[in-house]
Image: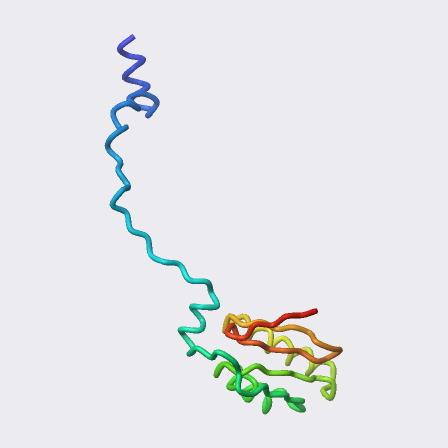
Length: 128
């Protein structure tokens, strides 16, 4: 029977009683976890309420996308109306806006046909 115990011990199947008192997690300290929106607020500066909401009707992707990006990164909510843009450019602009919102931990919501709201993580949006 000694051989069976040696094989069981080698395979990790025996000797469980040896380890009962070895592991003690009383001294473990855990770091406070903050939701993504709080981390983003610390990273980009906290904005309790936006002083302005920028509404923009872009005409050209190359000239208007950087403007939208700057305002959104600064914590300002942006209403984006792409109704005056050709379909391929409008799609590209909305894709850019969605990536911007995701990258800055904000959100993008469609509020009307071809009209979108980009809200930073510091802005609470209630859609009814």
